[in-house]
Length: 313
Image (cartoon, rainbow, N blue to C red):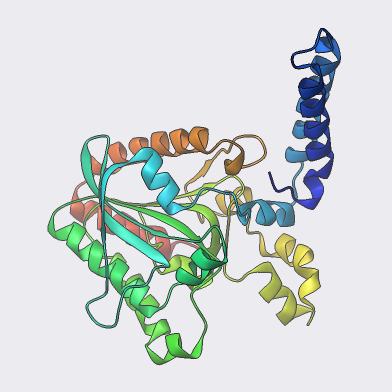
């Protein structure tokens, strides 16, 4: 497992425990008491480190390369996924995946940012940074969901919308603005879950939802810590200070009424136990879907509009 800087004491102790277990395997040597002591020490070390994470450390966990992505969660908690492609205008953006799926035998529309595990995959999906056609594709699928009266589940995980010349030429800002407007009038339940990075308009472009949930170590912010540091201090190395100032952690967001719920992660992050993380997310989606389906379409739209109008008040 790739470790972050602050995880090095944990990684070293895990290696030591594994070496002891390997050494005694098949030999008549009983070191079980020593192993047990080290495992107890490891458990306490994890609680000490992960229980006191600062904002920048949570950002680092949110970006962990082994963290589960949208397609991972779709495969773990949904079935019969049929991916749909294209915006019927320019092309198909691999940074956003969309399609029909079944959740607890109920048909839904699922949408989410997708990152890659290696350079080849990341280049294919542009590191999770969507182009205008990605946001237009997402909106097309939301309108399709409304037509068939299907709830929408959205997974957000992007550093931000792609800022390149081509994206701007094809109307990046307009595409995101149109989604913000149109999502306020999609008359079916919408649940958005920030599973990793929630960067700027890139996240908000598919984030106007009835319920907004954030994983414990994910973040949701108007700008990346590095971008903020470059603007405020002309020095991107001050990203840790910027992360604290931005108030981008799940607890900060909940305290300020930006989100509705924090989804707890396995100790050390979602990548430490993806199956457990997926089961927790499944429970949260199920609970919120039941709650939202009991509300009429007209009331749902009123509450959604009021929710976003009240932010920052």
